[in-house]
Amino acid sequence: MTLNYRNTQLYYTSKGIGNPIVFLHGFLESSNMWESFIPSLSEKRQVICIDLPGHGRSGNLEKVHSMELMAEAVHYILSYLKVSRSTLVGHSMGGYVSLAYAEKYPSEISGLVLMNSTPDEDSEERKETRDRAASLVERNKAAFINMAISNLISEENSLKFKNELDELKKEALKFSTTGIIAAIKGMKIRTNRLEILTNLKIPKYLIAGKNDPILDYHSIKEIANHCKSELLSLNDGHLSYLENRDEIKSFLHLID
Image (cartoon, rainbow, N blue to C red; front, side):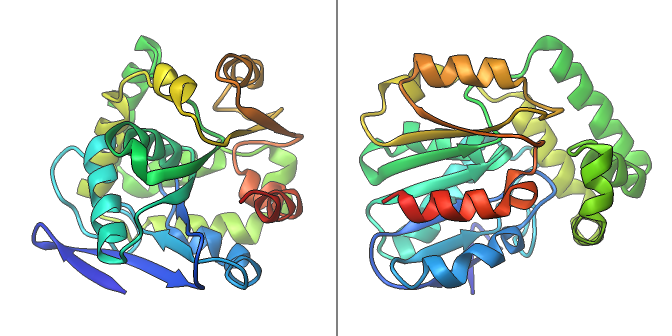
């Protein structure tokens, strides 16, 4: 389904009834990544999957897609669906958007799952990396997408999940250069939301890969302790929904 928002299209799917859970994908991903989780979860609750601006089948809103702007787009869809409270599950960048949503609409969130994500802002070194990434996208989008997605997973798992990674890359190639750069710039300027996460009086969960090449596992563990969030530790990398699918499925059926 698509909705017109600020003269562009936002894409979403909704299946099931009651107790809504909202899935937000990461950078260079789309709502397609959640497909294997929908059938069983939607038997007992409403499952909503959204393509964030500039990704999947959603259009671009601005030259910079801040996490706040993306959160507003999510809120527009949920308001249209008459969803007043929901559990948010965000992978990587989707986690950043979920935290921005929690800050803007605290009364409308009943639970939060940050999967391979963090409330921390970018370090100065990471911001410089973002700038280089944006430049590379302009010069050679295909090369950037191949490198960025390949770097999310171990060499061993890249062979194990070759077909899935190839599909991710193939889909990301369809995203506009403008949309990809807008997300990079938005992630670069995001603020630290550790205090927001700490102060949320709802069920909170962090899912972390012990061999995540993007996020330091021990830092995520410390954040979970500090914020009194439950930690689900997994043995693989940054794509827990793919590398640890069975564990994630079991976990999602346990949260309410």
